[in-house]
Image 1 (cartoon, protein in one colour):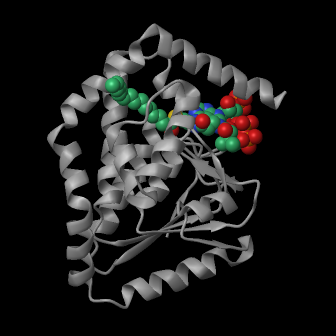
Image 2 (tube, helix red, strand yellow):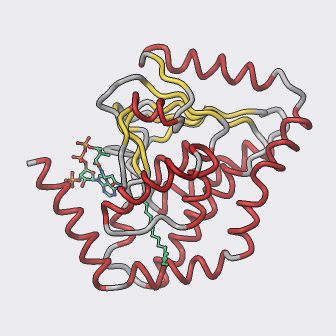
Amino acid sequence: MMKLKSPPVNSLSLELLTEFAISLEKLENNRACRGVIITSSVPKIFSSGLDITEMCGKSMEHYTEFWRAVQEIWLRVYSSSMVTVAAVNGSSPAGGCLIALSCDYRIMAENPKFSIGLNEAQLGIVAPFWFKDTFVNVVGHRIAERSLQLGSLHSAPEAHKLGLVDELVPEEKLMEKAAAVMAQWLALPDHARQLTKTMMRKPVVDRLVAHREEDIKNFVTFISKESIQKSLRMYMEMLKKRKS
Ligand SMILES: CCCCCCCCCCCC/C=C/CC(=O)SCCNC(=O)CCNC(=O)[C@H](O)C(C)(C)COP(=O)(O)OP(=O)(O)OC[C@H]1O[C@@H](n2cnc3c(N)ncnc32)[C@H](O)[C@@H]1OP(=O)(O)O
C-alpha cells in the first residue's frame, strides 16, 4: 500500500512527486511485490492535484524540473507492471484525479461531498494531451470532452455514473474492498495481465515518450505567460477567500 501523506491537502509538490517516484521504483523492482493500493492518509482528501505554488512565480528551470517530475509519475503509474488500485478516500481534483485514472481500478468512498475530475479549465489552464488521453481511455470521448471543456468536478455518485470510478463503497469499507479487488486481479497469471495492459496503454505512453521534451517546452512556455500566471494567482486567492 502507498499512502500519500503531505498535509493539509496532499498537493503534488516537486518533493512529493520525487518521493512518490522513488517509492514506486522500489516496489517495481521488488519481484515479490505484484500490486499496490494507492490511497491517502489525509482525511477527506485523496490529493488536491499539482501544487499550484510550484507553477507560480518560479524560474523556467524550476518549471522544467517540475514538469519532468509530473511526467515521470504518470509514466510510472500508467505503465506499471504491478496491479494498481486507487482507493479514493477523499476529493481528488486535477493531478489527483490523473493519478486515480492512471491506476487499473478505482474505488471511491461514497461520500457525496467528495469530488473528482480534471478541472484544469476552471483554473484557466489546459489539461495536456496525455491527461486527456488517460481520461478518454477511462470514460470515452464524449464524456471526457464535455467534462474537460467545463472543467467539471464530479461528486462521487456522479463520477460512478460516468464510469470515472469503477465502484463506490461506504468509507469504512474502502480498504477492505480495495484488498478484495487486488486479490481478484492478482489471481491471474502476471505475464498475461501485464502484456494485456501494455497492449492497451502503450500507444498513449509512447506518444508522451516520443514528445517528452516538446511537452516540457510547451508547458514552460504556457505556464510562464503573464496571463496564465495571473489566472493561477487569482485561483489561489479564491481558495484562500473561500476559506475565510
Ligand atoms: C495548444 C496549447 C496547448 C498548451 C499546452 C500546454 C500544457 C500546459 C499544461 C498546464 C497543465 C497544468 C496542470 C495542472 C493540473 C493540476 O493539478 S492544477 C491543481 C488543481 N487543483 C485544484 O484545483 C484544487 C484546489 N483545492 C481545492 O479545491 C481544495 O483545497 C480542496 C477541495 C482540495 C480541499 O479543500 P479544504 O479541505 O477546504 O482545504 P483548503 O482550505 O481549500 O486548502 C488548504 C490549504 O491548501 C492550499 N491548497 C489547496 N489546493 C492546493 C494546490 N493544488 N496547490 C497548492 N496549494 C493548495 C489552500 O490554498 C490552503 O492554503 P492556506 O491554508 O490558505 O495557506
